[in-house]
Length: 229
Image 1 (tube, one colour):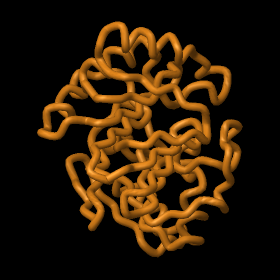
Image 2 (cartoon, one colour):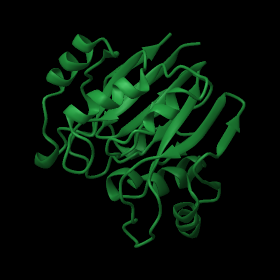
Image 3 (cartoon, rainbow, N blue to C red):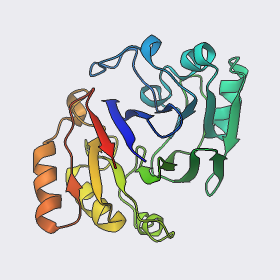
C-alpha cells in the first residue's frame, strides 16, 4: 500500500493514504516554515515525540476540532487530557498502540522535555507501521548507540526522519552515524533551517550519507510529499 509522507516543516509530518490521517508533532502556528495552517489539516491520530512548544504545537486545537486520538508519553498525555482533549492515550518506552491500519511504538530519545505549561516528561522517538511500511521518527535526539537496537527489532526501517540541525539535536555529522546505525532504505532530514541556530547544509548531509552507502536521502522542501510504495 502507498503511504504519503508530507513534511510540514521542522519536525512536523502528515501521513496519509495508509488508512488514517496521522499527524506527528504538528507545530504549524508560529512555524516560519509551515506551508499549511492547523485549521487545514485532517487528523485521526496525533502522535507526539515530546512536549516542547515546537513539537506539541497545535495538538490540542487540532484534536478538539477533529476528534483525533492523541498519543503521548504518560505525563504529557495527562496534561493534554486536562486541557479538554477527549481521546488521549498515554504510553511509555517500549509500549505499542495498535490500530486497524498499523501500530505506533514509543522508543527512547536523548533530549530534554518540559511542556510550555511546565510538565516534565521524557522525550521519545516513534516507530510507526503505516501503509505496510515502517517509519522511524527519531524525535529531537542526540546521537546514542542504542539507535542500533531499533534497526534490530525485526522490521527493516523503510524511512527514517532524522534531525540534522544541531544545537538542540544531533548535527548533520552525527546524523550520518545515526543513519549508519539504523540502516533505513530512505532518510528524510528534519529539524533544520527553521531558525538560525539550526541552519545547516542538508545537501552535504545527503552527500555524506549516500557516498558512505548507508541510505538514500530525500531532501524535501516544507510542504513536499514523498510516497512510499
